[in-house]
Structure formats: structure tokens, C-alpha cells
Amino acid sequence: MKYCHLVLSLLLTLGLCACKDEVATIGQAAPALAALDAQDAPVSLEQWRGKAVYLNFWSAGCGFCLAEMPRLDALRQQYKDAVEVVSVNIDPESISLDPTLQKLQVSFPVLRDSLGITRDRYQVEGTPAGFLIDAEGVLRRSFVGTRAAERLEVVFREAALTVANSVDSK
Image (cartoon, rainbow, N blue to C red; front, side, top):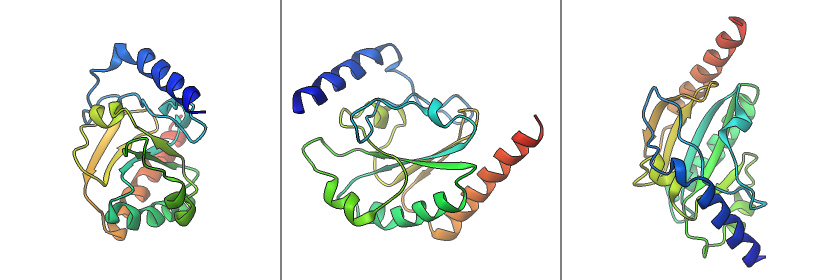
């Protein structure tokens, strides 16, 4: 299994070398993800095209990150037709996420960015960090540090309204 994960990581890295220098810029297309899902498969933002994406960077040792996760999960459930939460863990591969994820029981996708490529593209220097990507894949907002529940609610509500207005205008 470890060998398989290493091969997948290597393939992912080689496959994304051409766009390694992507940098997150508000108003521009969101940088590609260079992270693996729970089954060690590469993931693309294209999977959620048509929905807004709240991209959440976190670390297992970050208490603020762990406290925010249940709120993000509740908002994902509330706005599931318009907004998806995608969680990107930035811990080294040597740190097991299983105990943390079993305790949290979140319903959103949890990705691993063990190589740090996605973290570098989004210029994440600390956690938690969040990015709002619209339904067309354009980066709209960034957030550093923990956000109050009310502020997160506003972000999700506005994102859902934008998605609804986009659908209505088509």
C-alpha cells in the first residue's frame, strides 16, 4: 500500500509539473489541486463545477481548525445544493488523520496535500485558511485564521445566492 501511495504521489507530481507555478489570485481561475483523496486518487476542482467550493486548509494539530470543522460540515449540509466544502490537510504523510476524522465525522471530502504543492499554490502560511471558489472555478475570496460562525454563514449564504442567480440567468 505504501508503495502504491508513493507511485501515485510521484505520478501526480509529474503530471502537475507544468502548472507548478500557479498562484492563487482573486478574480482569476483557481489553481489546480495537487492533493489526493482518501482512496489516494488525484482530485480536480472540475468535480464540483456548477457549485461554489469552500476550500479549507487545516492541520490536525490546529485546535482552531478542528473547532471549525463541525461548523463547516453543518454549513455544507445546509447549502449542499450550491456549496461544497473541500478540506485540504497539510500535515506530513507520517501523521495519521484516521483518529481525527473518526472523531469529527465530517461529510465533506478530505484531501491530503502531503507534498505541499496545493498549499504553495494557494500561498497558505498558516491554518485554518479558506478560499471561496465560484461555480465557474474563479477564486473570489480568501480567509486567514478562524472565522466566527456568523461570518461563515454569510459567506455560504452569499455563495449559494450567486450560484442560484447564475443558474437562473442561463
